[in-house]
Amino acid sequence: MKHIIDSRPCMAAPVRVLLVAALLLGCTLGAPSQAVAQEGSYRPGLPSQQTTTLVTPPRGNQAFLLGHAVGTQGYVCLPRGAGAAWTVNPARPEATLFTDLFENDVQIVTHFLSPNTHPNRFAPNPLPFGNATWQNSFDSSKVWAQAVQSIDAGTDSSCPNTGSISCLLLQVIGSDSGPGGGQSLLKTTFIQRLNTKGGSAPAEGCATTSDVGNQKLVPYTADYYFFRKND
Image (cartoon, rainbow, N blue to C red; front, side, top):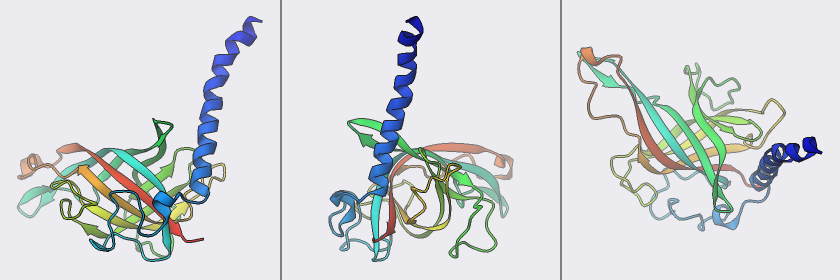
């Protein structure tokens, strides 16, 4: 009897995790909600057609997933000319994307820099040493993307925080299924980075050759919208 009683708490957590994963994957793979799927009725913060089209995916793409990112942009001080400057391309992102589920923040995607092992026709040739990566937290499917358009923070209602990292439209340049065959992100065509706050390269600490080698992790938050082709 003791074995049975003690085992119940051990089983409860994995069961809850599986239920949450099933629910989130169902939302991801199913029909997008009206809040993010219908043109002209996106969630607040998305750029309207009247304000900017630079970071809006081409027609025929619809949003199917939103994650609020909390993380850092990593910078390294490298030589430049007679002095030094922080690396900005690429800055090294490390972030976790969350969604709200029953008034609880649930991790859905991790964001980092990694080699693009399955490039598509949009990938540059040769590939850089690493590309921005988004990996699903439940089925481990992943996509790589590169920026194709940007707007400066503080210039649009979708990117209101002056001095923060820019808001971006990123095109997917590679994808890979998870080890168990997960495919929830494989149909992603574009990713928007909006509502950025923080993350810009430091104003100090990288001016002369004596600063070379300095590193900084700068906190940032942002909203990432994932798009796929209309069904």
